[in-house]
Amino acid sequence: MAPWGKRDDMITHDTEPYNAEPPPEALAGRTLTPVDTFFVRGHGPIPTLDPDAWRLSVGGLVEHPMTLSLDDLHVRFPRRDVVATLQCAGNRRVGLQAVRPIPGETPWRSGAISTARWTGVSLADVLAHAVTRPDAAHVEFTAPDVSPEARPSQAYGGSIPLAKATAGEVLLAWTMNGRPLPAVHGGPVRVVVPGYLGARSVKWVTGVTVRDRPSENYFQAVAYRLPEGGALGPVAPGSDILAPGENAVLPAGPVMVHGYAFGGEDRGVDRVEVSSDGGLFWRPADLDPAYGRWAWRLWRAVLDLPVGESTLVARAWDTDGACQPESAASLWNPGGYVNNAWPRVRVVVA
Image (cartoon, rainbow, N blue to C red; front, top):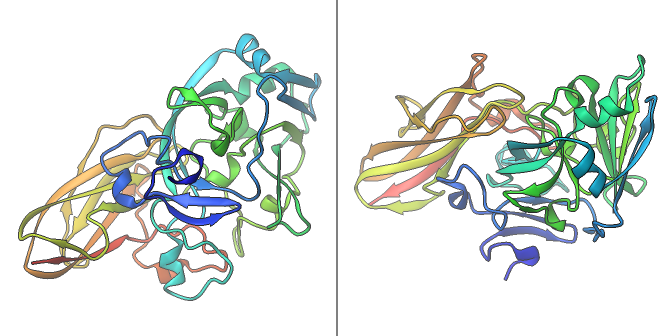
């Protein structure tokens, strides 16, 4: 049995902190990812917090600082559901590591992305009660999970721009797919920042601080940054092939290929194309209906593959007209972040 109630076939990269992803095939065909299948990215020991004793401090550049209990969130603010896809910044890092080694970074495959229905209250409603001051520009989140990855060791944290924090979709969530939020996913309360990389959806949140500048926390100021682009935020448009898996041996005849596409931020998915010959010829994939503006869209295509080896490739366009880059080589960076290059899967047809 895998730790924390996860499925037995989870690919566990670390046990402390716990970092694990499902095999890609386990994500195929499911718009909502079951809790036992949802990936986990940890930075330190998972804290165990008593929901009755949990408190959230709201302060900084606000007129009315507050300390809120879980009951306060339930009673004082309207409840909201959001279906949102969360993606680790290092998802598909193995593709970048194949270009050039990235020492010390977790070799995430294709499963560090999942989708759930989150229930909680809008951060915008909480901030409206606190009343942000005119010089406010960013909202910082703090949590009690101390990470030895940081230099110096410190609790995890990060921030998002005030405009994103007050847009309405960012949640203080306590429910995941209709169940109380498990400790491994940030219970009793976590932040969910739809459209942003998962690093900004701080788990076990205990502090919300309105600031005039971004957080100085290690995981905002040092980690989760690109050398030329600053701190990571909105997700880049991308897609992946979930099934069949790499080096699968398939019978001759039509083959069903499954995958997902994700626009990121508030962009939708316009179309997906797939190729069975490494990208020489393409055909459109069938897209599932949109499941909300913050969720991935699953796709499928039936391909007639010749006997022998084939390389399956996919590419997606978002609703702004942006397409995935072709090559992971053009995306390499020392953190191994944001690999949204065309996914490629080699299969054998016998």
